[in-house]
Amino acid sequence: MEQLETTLGDIGSFVWGPFFLIPLLLGTGLYLTIRLGFVQFRMLGSALKLGLLRRKDDTREGDISQFQALTTALAATVGTGNIVGVATAIAIGGPGALFWMWVTGLLGMAAKYSEAFLGVRFRTTDEAGDKSGGPQYYLQKAIKGPFGKILALAFAVFAFLASFGIGNMTQGNSIAANVESSFNVAPWITGLVLTVLTMLVLLGGIKAIGRVTAGLVPFMIVFYVVAALYILIVNIDGIPAAFALIFTDAFTGTAAVGGFAGSILIIAIQYGVARGMFSNESGLGSAAIAAAAARTTHPVRQGLVSMTQTFIDTIIVVSFTGLVIITTGVWDLGEDAAGTMTGAAFANGLPGEWGHWIVTAGLVLFAFSTILGWSYYGERNVERLFGQRLVMPYRVLFSLIVFVGCTIPLAVVWNFSDIMNGLMALPNLIGLLVLSGLIARETRHYLKHDPSLTASADDIETFMAAEPGWADWKSGNVVGSSRTHTGRVPVHVRSEDSSGTHNA
Image (cartoon, rainbow, N blue to C red; front, side, top):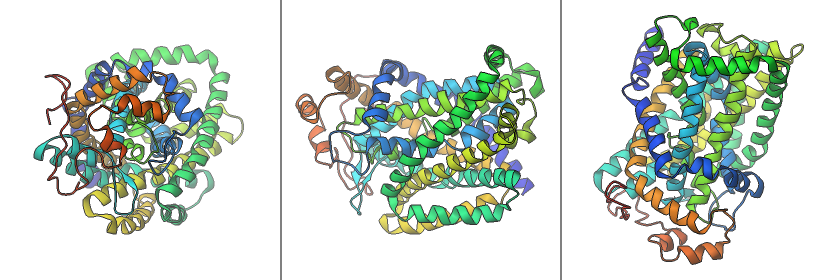
């Protein structure tokens, strides 16, 4: 097991090194931000209003509401990464890692918008009559020839494998460790209970997942943030110093990590970006799978709603966790204490034993909801690779792997997850760059006519009627062919300009 841990660690360091995924992830986010006219800042208010207050759109086309699609995506992201992941990033990379998590989140909002837009734009209907979409479909449908097919299949394979890491074993492992620490319950007992609960929900499919997450996610986020807010109010004098430490260490590193300044800075960026993606999944492509199931009148609308998930996850929940860890002074306990660092911070900041209880309860709720959300991501890729017949066996296997995750070492689980996340993101990020012209053109056209996101379905029909592909998307048979497994009928999309989307 030690050799496996070392090998996975070496591979993960390369995947998330300064010459591979980090520049691609940040560069793609920056490029899309500029190309889309800083859409994540311009449209954030309207998107939050549509997703959180109005909650649904004027259409029946889809399986779940926009709010349920948002909470399913939030369920899959607001999990271990927001509690243990933040602590790990700060423990290894120093407080400056939090800054790079913010950068990843803010730039990642443009990537999250883009992939969710494409997920709805090129979604299809599976053999069971459910909407199915995501990079495993849109990469092949929107990019001409074998290149798109290779990207789509690569994503599907890596997403299938990643579902057992980021969405399964890491969550179960963290739940088991914290429950054992707080209540002295053996990990195998926790694993058995989680396995049974997971299987009970998954048997109901996306509609059951949507109902559970719509009720669970808002409660758990408010519950956790209120506790963190209390600690920050109590330690309000330390907040300015915490921000100063974060911004200073983001560019200089911190001596607490050890080594020389150059290596410290690289570590801060590496762990900030890696844990940032683990937490908010922007650029990973996963949220597009949930977005594709949403009832929405236009892909732009669901893209904007999905974009708010990154804002809630990183700018709100991650920030509260990081600031609590730094202001309570536990951030330099070291890498070995990363798994319990957030618990220690809350224990220091809250009276009595409330801190450990709240973190444990929050972690259980966060991680269990992530398991549910990622089970759906995994099964959509199983359906893409093998057809509907293997979806139910996958749900059973996924539930059983939760038990495995509860009983193996934490480092192995995290290293495996980092590798799979990186490999899963690679084809999606390439696809987003290739399709950036299509995304920008169609986004501009829609927002020109409906900048406040209040247009009715009839109004949208009027100003979209002449747009290429609109009639096919409306009929539920998006541009191209439903023969997604053969790839014989590629989608032809119009380039915006010579530097824009791939002229497929």
